[in-house]
Image (cartoon, rainbow, N blue to C red; front, side, top):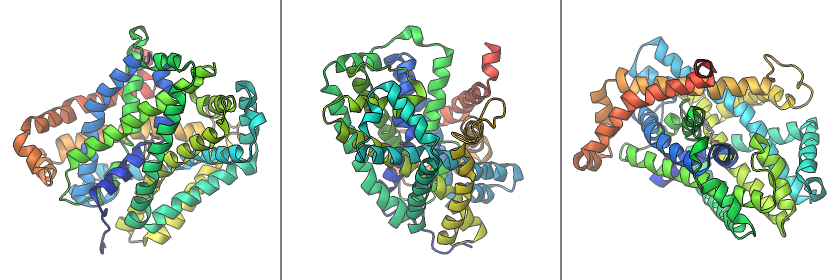
Length: 457
Ligand code: TRP
């Protein structure tokens, strides 16, 4: 069925594309506020530990599954087993791709909309935190605004996937990831040089061990997993375009380092600014759209920083969205024999239809709830809290126990001969983490997401 499957043009191309998937709203929006709420530096240390013991091992497993089989999640399992159960696990990954992209693109649309708000100089709407929140509410209840930017974001995402691996995703990532880093460093320097920035740094970097409890550890674990785009085969699919000459383990390590460094810089950029203008650092999920515009409105030259910040957010979301759509498109191309262009347009449209009720959940559908959750909340919960940890758990089990560990090692060795020959204990450690620690810890995250753990403790 497969003619010439594309490959990344270079190893750095793969690393940037995969880091682009990992670095997203999770790094810039979620990480800073959960770190702030859960003990700052103490939380960050625990988070780094979680990244090392479950993030990295599962990331290696996912990329390896893709590179070995050269397929999307469904095709990958189909190539390695006949079991309908495991092929279904791949199917759950493809379904998660549809679901996550449908609501992720709604939020990403806001980021684009906020670039425009800043460009047209709607600054009076952001003068204080309260006014900014009110303006936010008036924007998300404006249906043409919310649906329009959602549609625009989907079209841009589709364009990159339509152009293919090398010309679309790789080229786009090679241009956008350096821009993202530069924007973030500018914002960090701006933050640190503000008067009163020490307070923000202290909030983020002083350890407060009294805030570390089981809950904080579970949040760190869950986020370690989410931020690396694990559990649904996005990294698997990107790995499927990787050459057997490249080293999977070292690529994974580089992706993890980039993702973590960006999250930390984002934390510094955001909290120094928030404290410098005396706004509430514990604004939680609303931090980005309610607080940040007000922060910039109070700063000299804030207009430009606001444009930079929301451009940064849009780029981060775009490179993540591309990987989500790629999982879906790769399935239709590999397994159903569609061509890439047709698959991109058709599936992009399906995601758009699925995303509409999510966009409308902030306005006309706001009162249609199930267990107090809107359509948006339900899709988010189902995908992020159930499918992703479940998928990650099953991927760790498959690679650790079902695939056959001698085959796993033989495939991992390709491109990593030096590592295997000179540092064999690295491989032994990976095996131990993947087989024993990761599945248990991810399973605990799943129970926590479902609220089962909270019932026990
Ligand atoms: N890692 C992304 C972020 O931090 C979010 C994400 C989770 C994701 N799972 C994914 C992105 C799968 C792409 C594919 O924002």
